[in-house]
Image 1 (cartoon, rainbow, N blue to C red):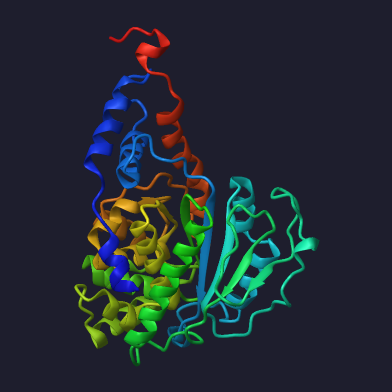
Image 2 (cartoon, helix red, strand yellow; image 1 turned 180 degrees about the vertical axis):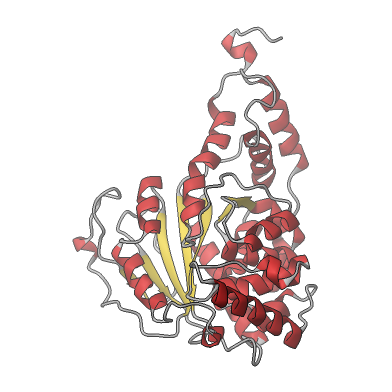
Amino acid sequence: MLESTVAAIRPLDESAMAAARELQGRLTKPAGSLGALEPLSVRLAGLAGTCPPPLPDPAAVAIFAGDHGVHAQGVTPWPQEVTAQMIGNFLAGGAVVNVFARQAGASVTVVDVGVATPLPIGPPADPAALSADPDGPPTTPAVLSAGLVATPADPAGPRLVAANVRAGTRDMTVTAALTRDEARAAVETGIRVAAELTDAGAAVLLTGDMGIGNTTPAAALVAVFTGVDAAAATGRGTGVDDETYARKVGVVRAALERHTPDPADPLGVLAAVGGLEHAALAGLILGAAARRVPVLLDGVIAVSAALAAAAFAPDAVGAMVAGHRSAEPGATAALRHLGLDPLIDLGLRLGEGTGALLALPVVTGAVRVLHEVATFDAAGVAEK
C-alpha cells in the first residue's frame, strides 16, 4: 500500500495553475492585493487539476493518538495516562479541537494507532440517540472497531477508529522506537484513513494528534530531516521548566547519536525515532496527496510527519497547506525546509488539530474568491 500510494503522487498541474493565475488577474481587485491567498488558490487549482478548484468542504479532522517509551526519560511532567483520558474527552466532545470543529462544521475522527493504556470509552453508541445538531452540545461517540469511518458530513459526533499497532513505542534512547514493520503499519493506517474519509466525501483533511511526550520524537524527526541541531529542533512542549527542557534536548541528542538515522530512508527514520502518530500522520498526508486532496497541517507534530511524507514523495508537498506557525521552534525549521508559509501565527502550541481548524476559513476564502468574485469585464469595472 505504501509503495502504490507514493507512486500515485504526481506534480501539480501547470495548466490549471496558469488558468488560476490568469483568472486572479481578471478579478475586480488590484493584482496581488490578497497576498498569500492568491498563490494558495493557484496551488490548490494545480492540486485539483482544474480552475477554480473545488471548495474545501466538507472538512474532516483525523486525530492520531499514541504513547511513547521515551516518556520514561522524564521529558514531560504529564503522566502517560493523559493520552487515553484525552481521547475520552475528544469522544465526549469536550476538548478545544471539538469546539473549533463544531465552529468550522468539520467532523472529528480519533484513531488509536498506539495508545498504551486502556481507553475510557463505552460500547458503540446508539445512532438514534445522537444529536443531529452539529452546533449543539457534545454527543455520545460512535466507536468503530473495524477501522471504518462514517461520512465526515455526519453530525453525530466524534468517532473512534481502533487501529492500535502496538501499545506505545519503545524508548528511542535505548533501542529503535519501532520496527520497520510497525512503522509501515502505522503509515498505512494513515493512508487507509485518508482513503476512507475522502471516499466518504471529505474535500480537505486536517491533521490532529494526541500523545503525551510526542514533541520529543517530533524534535528528533525535525533534526534528522532538516539537519538542524537538536537544541534548535526541541521546544518546551506542554511548558516544561528549564531543567526538564535541558533533559529533553539531551534525550533527543542521545537518540540521534545512537541511531544516526538516514533522512533518505524515511521509514527507517520513523522506526528509529518516530512515534506511531507521527508515522500515521505521514500516511494521511501521502494518502491525501495521492488523491489530490489538500491536507491542512496543524503544529509541530504534523509538520514533523510532513517532513517524512516529503521524504517518501517530494511532490506530496503540493498537497500540504501550513495552517499555522506553532510556538515550538522545530515547527518553523520544518516549514522552512518544506518551503511552506503558515497562514496564521497566534503562538499556539496545543496540537489536536486546533491551529489547522482555525486556518480552515482562510483556505476556504482563498478558493471561494476564484468561484465568486466578478471579473472586471463582467462587473463593468474599469481596469487601471
